[in-house]
Length: 297
Length: 278
Image (cartoon, rainbow over the protein chains, first blue to last red):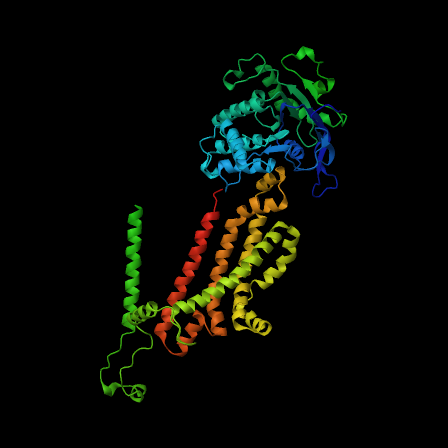
């Protein structure tokens, strides 16, 4: 169990249900691990508890069962080791672009000089292409620019673990594409450990080293850990020409369309401490065939 | 188009002013008596003379205003002070009472807004105390404080406190959870979160509460000074009523309006500094 940078063990979340003694179990028996420097996406249908898992990792929510160990320590609350990018940018609207970042950087390194804080913040804002709009307020930025400020702010505090909750969900497709590439660039330079929720299969194939697939809720669990065996650096324009692209993409889509549901009904019979099956759609021969559970489901 | 709009509004505005003043002037013009035979018994008793109307004409008010404003700060004894001096007394009391209320209401509102327990615990008291006319406190204040000037300040304090308290608590409680989560993930201390996240987020709501408070305080000071007497614009109005000097009363009414507008304008300017667009 040790040796992994981030270890999620037997995580479960239950909510009391009005008019019933039995609480609703959103997810249970969630076990997975993330290595340092890894980019992991999690995909699942609405209601499977992805956001709750992310909030638990951020320390903003508490699990009903199980725990999360990061770097040898149990996560018990929010800290500067976990940076979060929320779905709706969550910038402070009374601060300028620059001050939204310096605000976080000052909190992270209180002993730094004003000049150093500024220089560090500007560097990260330049990485996402916002060097020209430092003095603008969030209301004067486009939706995409605001989300980039959020990305710069999260990367600038150099957390051990960066959590993103559908960071591009509110953006139009064109803007999303541009920012995905910017995210790839900044990640390539910093090699942060990233855990990201997405609904977009192509986004996960472009960004992730590994995609975790969740079955439908209630009683959701992480069923598979799909390795995205596509060499980096990846580019949106040429991604679909990579030999690994379609096998991975088809595997993910097939899971979401078909097996997320059938596995959900089958999952209840399985071991609560089960770990997700590791799958590499690009080299399926290297892995054992699917267990009987999947076929019968 | 904008200048056009401004121009048209100005024309309507000035026309309205001229029409109102004209009607006022006509209504207060001395009546021409047609003949002694038709005099009523009252007029006969009054000597049949053409009585000037009790309400002064706008021209009289204007000339009185020019006279008063040419020497605003003279002080010729307790019952004869310049209008500027009287207004200064009133503004001073409002500032003292309002300032004390700011010192109490904003920190208290902050605490109430941040704590759901205190919010629920204090809400009944606020709801009961808020609708009490501030002048109802006056006898109690006079008895306990035993000083009319301080009592007037207390009345201003008590009427200013509620809108600020309620708005501060509301503004603080309504700070977006996202922003608080940002503070939590950055491990900001409670105090730092209060000053760098909650205060700027709630500042526009707090300023609105301050605006409402200062407006009420200015309404109340006139009534309070009529009661406690001595100095101030409220006392001035009551004193001139006792002198039956209605030109002074009308002039004072106008000045109360103008000063109230300026007080409000100052807080509008202040709220520009804390306003943000979400």
